[in-house]
Image (tube, rainbow, N blue to C red; front, side, top):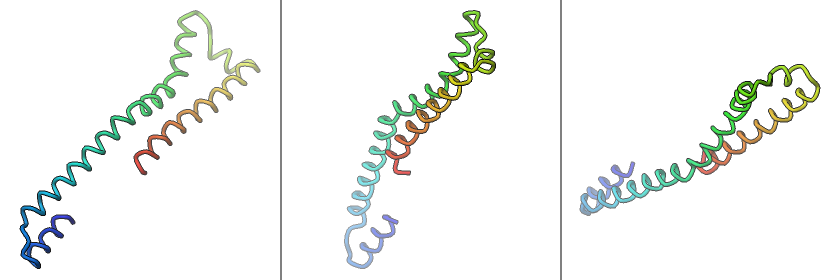
Length: 108
């Protein structure tokens, strides 16, 4: 679209096409650099979301490695079910929040 506008101005007004194209290139380069900078800044929030999603699995693996039976406790005791439901809700809220921050910053 910018190229078409440069072409029309050059044809209609006799302005130099090269100058318009240089300005267009500069604007596109700035936009590309801003997107790259935003991606770099959001890397922390994205890694937080990934880490939050993997923590429950890590906890189950650590419990099993220590000789406990975490799935039995979580699924067959009242306290375990309460912890499972509460932890699942907090886990879901944390991942949702981190992804919301990323999407909000990206403007989606």
